[in-house]
Length: 87
Image 1 (cartoon, rainbow, N blue to C red):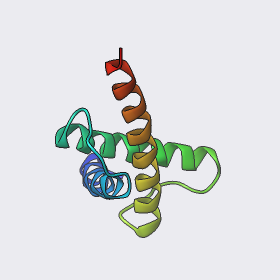
Image 2 (image 1 turned 90 degrees about the horizontal axis):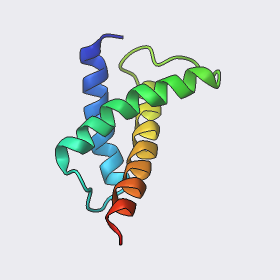
Image 3 (image 1 turned 60 degrees about the vertical axis):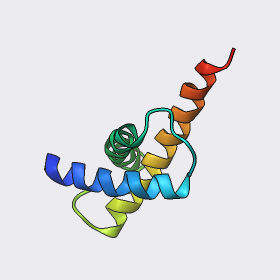
Image 4 (image 1 turned 90 degrees about the vertical axis):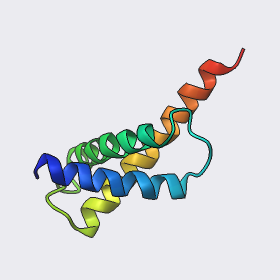
């Protein structure tokens, strides 16, 4: 899958992850987009490791895996980013 497809799936996954896991993000919209792109990559990697197949194009299975990865990364990011601001 090309880098442009990863970016597009990541943008969509980031928006869906933001809707699933609403709240104020420490980094704003741009960080959420980046988390969506990285989440798509991480979700595809984990899916491949677990034997569920690869993320091989723009389809519902790939989008589902990308959204799961994005939600996971958004959750982790919020825990670390908000945890460091507390005194």
